Image 1 (cartoon, rainbow, N blue to C red):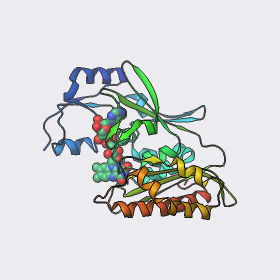
Image 2: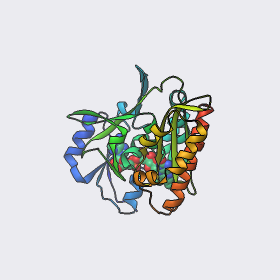
Image 3: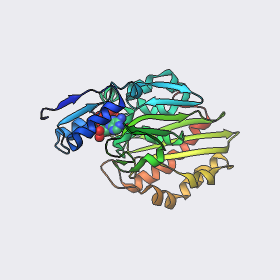
Image 4: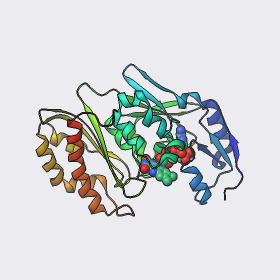
Length: 289
Ligand SMILES: Cc1cc2nc3c(=O)[nH]c(=O)nc-3n(C[C@H](O)[C@H](O)[C@H](O)COP(=O)(O)OP(=O)(O)OC[C@H]3O[C@@H](n4cnc5c(N)ncnc54)[C@H](O)[C@@H]3O)c2cc1C
């Protein structure tokens, strides 16, 4: 059972931030509540006040200006999966969002809540990394912008400081000729493994590639060393490189045994799925339609 809670519904970042400063540890920012209400119900956290941030216009906005798509933190997974602009700009993000959990969680949960909670078993962060996404975070005193890989600090830990809100996610347009894909492995609702690729592949040769793997270790990560190793190689060689680089993947991704699979299994599948995702990207964008 949930204890009675006071609900605040600010309409600006300033009001939300001031409410948080006023109530301190007794308050929590609340978006869709998909995670928060579970934590409260199971008494894993305490709160007396929920500060609902969904009425703040800035957090509901979606717009493309000067080559950057700005996605408000409070857009839901379902809204992003269905949105024509997202499908055109970052089709593999739309694809990843369409595979989050189930329709109830996709309708309730928001992109900002997902990234701010930073559960390792998540989809959108992995795709956003290969898009070189950044986030704007702020409070009543001001705003700051961080690359997404700086925002993700560790499992369930981000660069958000007490009282700071995640405002929006910025996604630069992909350079011409680059296509993307996202592949996910799951036994239950939450993913066991997610692999995202953005690449330019000409006649079977990789001109440029960005790779990211999520879910198997503490946080989603880009694989910069592997990206360099596969540049200027044929697709078939890249697959061999992925299989041969187990030690790098193990050290970099720090896979763990958990209920969703053993570390060895997830590592093996990461190598296989990186190859599959590259091949899929070579055939055009996944998730555009
Ligand atoms: C059954 C189930 C299955 C799931 N499966 C998947 C899956 O397959 N893939 C996947 O990616 N995710 C999955 N999730 C996670 C889900 O996507 C996220 O929990 C959800 O998106 C969180 O968003 P929310 O708006 O509900 O956040 P809330 O529950 O409202 O908040 C989560 C946390 O983020 C903080 N917060 C929220 N918004 C902001 C903000 N703008 N700024 C700062 N802090 C903020 C809150 O204070 C809280 O600490 C699953 C969750 C459940 C319950």
